[in-house]
Length: 473
Ligand code: PNW
Image (cartoon, rainbow, N blue to C red; front, side):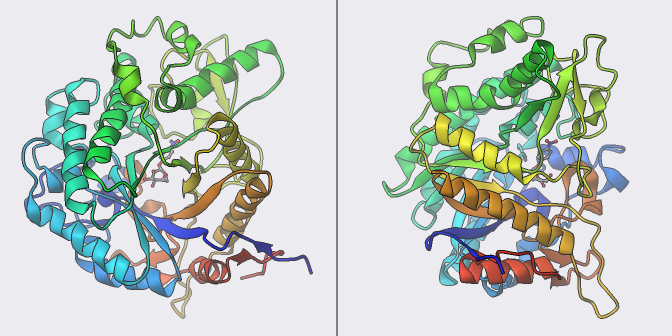
């Protein structure tokens, strides 16, 4: 019997969600539409026309949901604030009723010993700001800083872990490049400008938080830092890898962690934009001291050169679109990494998570790391007795947690892990068809049933160790 795999005693065992994916109550207490309300209500944008109107009614069921977290032995919970609940037009004073919801949620968490990690922006831009140009315009970054300071002032007394943006890559390149996410635009130059303004928003937002929060507060960002591999050592494949790596990672980590874009990025995208959106001082503004870095990881990417164009490009797992989320990279092909896949079609590869953690251990020495998302979608169904067995998810979590532990043994400072997701929820353009939850939600009755993976995770979190060998469901 192999030895159990023990984690540091202060390790955070968490779960993550985001506002639009779980809250519902989209017209209550002064909330106005975000780009995801508009997008999901536009025919053809989401599977089955699904929207977040009701979602899993977390806005009204948050107390029960926090009780569920406590039952599962979680000591951390990552959630996001809906910008248009707090600042309906994206400008001006905060709506207290909107903030009150998050105050109540946080108080409930604290009362149960669960540490809140608050994400300010998980993709739900107030529609009014999109109408004024959205992320491709500079003004949006300034508006974000104001919003950050409002939320910081309101909740800084009770929340100590803050995350500015969730996965700005998705906001920029799925939102404005391939158009599979809100607002659904397909303009490669706009996507690159959006990326720049997200970098600026992060920096200005971090500054605003620093001014609003007590000194003990931790400020971080969650990046879907891709693991990009090439099919061969051929210099053309390696060049494709380098370019995609810059568009996935360097474009955000560069400004945020080092105060500079990767040198080659401008040349690689010169045909798409002249980058005149970058003004003096922007890179210094984006480069704020951080207290931690959040890494979201699901699956690695595998690329090759494709001199004949985008023929095989669509195996990238980023959703169906005729438009690429990779500006200026039509001569790069994406391939399916071999191996078993989840219901999203994403290959299961825990070595990618280890690789990612070690990369950022080298690139940002001394910066504590958190895995702020990791998880898998499966086609879960209750059995006749109402139980939900998801041995595949247990295997996925086990493999990835073991990879985290290996990284710690290799010198990485990983302080916690948030599984995606606490509950089944609105999986963006896939609607409710893809279930990522450790807890099953019956979308008719809203009844929550912890899956076997939730019970397994509770045992792991409680013991602070992984069984050395995978125990069958
Ligand atoms: C992340 N991609 O989304 C988000 O942060 C979550 O809100 C989401 O539910 C979860 O992962 C599962 O999808 C991603 O195309 C969406 O590379 C798309 C991609 C990556 C992450």
